[in-house]
Image (tube, rainbow, N blue to C red):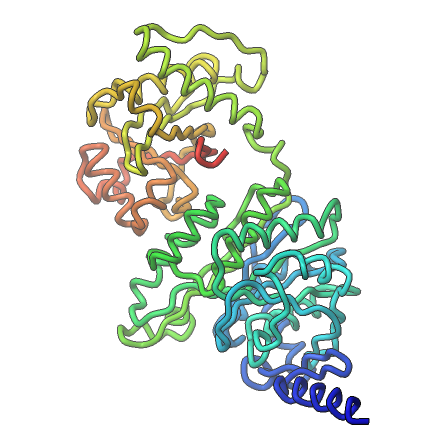
Length: 489
C-alpha cells in the first residue's frame, strides 16, 4: 500500500509540474486563442480565409517541400503567412512537421512532442506518433521537454492556417531551444531518415525576423538574413545569427530545414512576401518596436533540374585546383578533355579564392566562350595569378586556399531596378563603354540595401555616378549563379 501511495504521489507531482498539458490523454490546449487570433471558430475561419483570398504569391511549379512563415499575432503577420499557406491549399500532405522556437522557456536542443493532440478553436489535430518516435531517443540534443510547449505561440499560431488549407493530416510539433550547429545537423539527419522516400511530408518553420527599434534598419537586416536563406547557406546563416549579424528568432529551425532540404535534393528557396510591423501598422517611427515578417517556400524541384549536379560540381572544383597547381609548378595550362555534355556547354563563370576566409582572388567571364570546363580551368589560373588587387598565389599557399565557383545563368535585361532580387540576382550595369558587375553573393557578404548595392556597383565597379542606375540611359542585366565551394562539398 505504501508503495502504491508513493507511485501516485510521483504521478501527481509530474502532472502538477506542467499544468497546461493534459497528460491523461496527451492533449495540448491552446494558450493564445483570443489573443494572437480569434477564439471563436467562425471568426477565426473567416479571418484565415480572408487572408488567403487576399494573398497573391508567385506561382511555383511542382510541390512545396517546406514553408518559412511568421508567427506574430494575426493582425500583424497573418497576411504575410497567407502567401505561403495559399500555395499548399488542398495539397495531399499527410504529415506536417511544425518547427517553432522557444520564447518563454530557455533550454538547449530540440523538443519533440511525442504523441496525443493539439487543440485549436477549429478542433483537435492528431500528432503523428510514429514519425515523432523516430526522432526521439536517438540523440541527447533531441528529446521531449514539456515546458518548451507551455505558453508557447510559435507552433500554435500555424495550426489554424493548416486546418483551413489541408484535410486529413497529422502534425509533428517541435520547438527548438539553443542549438549548436552539430545539433542542427543531427536534427536534420533524423528528419531525413524519418521522411525516407515519402512525398507527403511538409516542413513548416515558424519564425519572425528583425526585432528592434529602428524600422529603417529592419529592411536592411531582413534583406541580408533572407539572402542567406535564398542561397541556402545554412552554415553562414547559423554563424550570422550567433554573431548578431543576422536576425531570425526561429533561425535554428531554419538552419535545420535548409540542411534537410539540401540533403533531400530540394535546392530552391523563393521569397513570397516580406514586410514588418512598422509597414503593417504605418508607425514608421524610430523608437517604436519593429518586427520583420516573411513567407518563403522551399521547392521540391530536384537537383537534376539545376545547371550542375553534385558530381559535376566536384569535378569542376578538382579541375580548378589541379589547374592552379599545375600552372604554379610548370607555367603551363593543365591538359585535359571532357565528354560530359553539360560541362561542354558555354556558360559564364567566376572563380573565387579565399584564404582564411579572406578574399585572395576573383576573376571570371560573364558570358561563356568555349567549353565550360575549360573556362573554369582558365579562370582558376587567372584568379590565382592575374587579379591585379593581389600578388600571385604561391604553391605553398594552396593548402590554405578554398576555391569557390559561380556558374552563371544567361543574362536577362530588365527595365526596372525593383525587379532585382537582392542576394539572389547578380547585376551588370552598362552605360556606353563603361560597365560593372556584382555577383549575387556580394549582397550577402556586405549586408547592403538595394540602394547601397546599386550605388556601389555604379560608382566602384563601373566608374559611373552612384545614382546612374536610376537614369533612363543605363542598361541593367540580371543573372543567377550556382555557387559551390570546396569547403561546402
